[in-house]
Length: 73
Image (tube, rainbow, N blue to C red; front, side):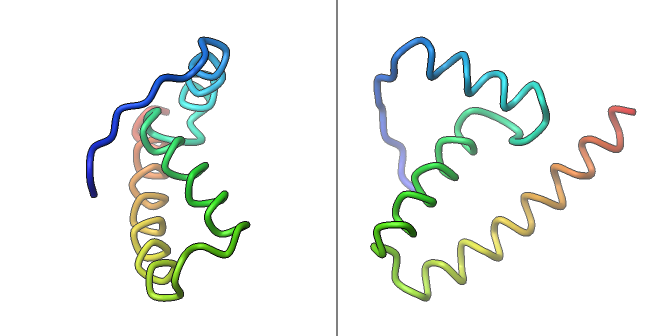
């Protein structure tokens, strides 16, 4: 992965923080990655190999997120 910097409106940050608080993503960065991925998929811009590799990473992340939720309760 590569680091990028972007500016977003305050309401977007608040919405991202709400998603994180609800436990749907572990942090803002992951929520943004998912949104970018979904846009690229919708536009047909991701090669098949990228989708497969990303799916494996997403599965691993989902498993870690579920583990985090279990330890919180």
